[in-house]
Figure (tube, rainbow over the protein chains, first blue to last red):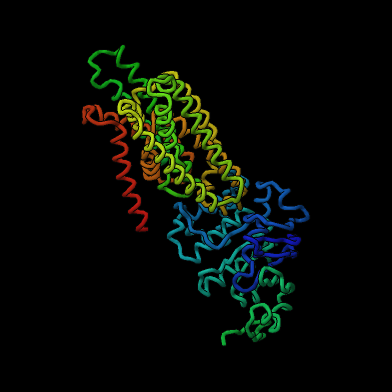
Length: 252
Length: 317
């Protein structure tokens, strides 16, 4: 379980994330939702130690992050940020191979190669493994990065806006892959997603943030409610149930 | 072509160029020619390797292929020191005439400056922004040092200025053998230390976030590597003088040649390319221009043009 206690981040006197205490349950998909500037990405970055925090603690299964060695942490928690422009020309397989770095320190053993093969298969990029990253489409590239995270073989996987710049088909593809990680492999997945309906249809739990504070958290089914959504986004919502999924309509 | 083959070809090139450099036009004066040229060859090997190696490492950390470690103003500091000594104590002072003292003073000043510089900057903040701040501060300080240098140069006696002018350009002729040995030990130590980080450098190419995610203690490693770079560049500059564009030229040539991201190939290749570039430059100076120009001029000319070309290319992409 990931637990944050009174987590705070301040930039020049204004807090971007303030006093956030949340529990992220293991083996579930939890999504951070909220308007722009709510502090979702900042929270995710602090939980994944990409960003230092100014107050509070983050703990992983009871141990504060600061007590864990960088190398050990990399075997338990993986994170993928939204911008992944590469300066180096890498093939898909090279990139996924980097995911084994916490184990192999750059020297891939047969065991590592096996995990790389598996990860590539899981995101269905086996045929493209020798292509260069810059030759891939947005959806393929995103899957290549997810394969790298998978090869890292961590219990916790954190992704910051994995659907950014993807069309509907690719978004669904990615969300299905992520859902599979939870259902088939028992991973704990934490996401920041902008599209409320993707959050509603795929997540187990939602954490709604606004102005750096947690406004609501709980089971997806409970949080997706017109009154709550109005409070979060400051605009009217209609919520329709279709095929046992709650769909939010907010376009007009 | 496999990376191994390319390295082998580079080794052969360097060996061939060395043989040519040692034997060409010797007119049978082996006792005179060989030791002198041997020393110069060692100087080429050491500075070529040190400058290329540190530039590659520096570019990996900064994620930028047109930056060189000189950006933090080490060249300008070197010139400021040389000019300062002449200005205060005269060109016949001990610190100017004794090569050992001059070398040690130069190296100590530059390494000390780098340490101080990093200490101040690493105290606050972290990550990418900090790196840019570091580069900008270095640039400003470099300009400041140059202005001070120019100020002193216009005040000193023209004869004294001659001495300073000699220091403005890299010279491989005035290198002394015991200094070569000392720098050799320093370089070897740094190269071995850097070699241990080769796979970490690969990961650093992915950028800070990915590196942290993969368990690299980013801040610690970047700091250590920057200090390594400072030691290498300071020693090379103290040994032969400022070489502006060499690193930029050879680092990029190495990437073009090797076409791999793996530092276990790039690092040794960069050393070979650096040595070959200096050897080739010197051969051209001696036999094409018959000493009408200096190696520095050729290097800065070629390197400068290459730099412009790189800038144009980067702008397009």
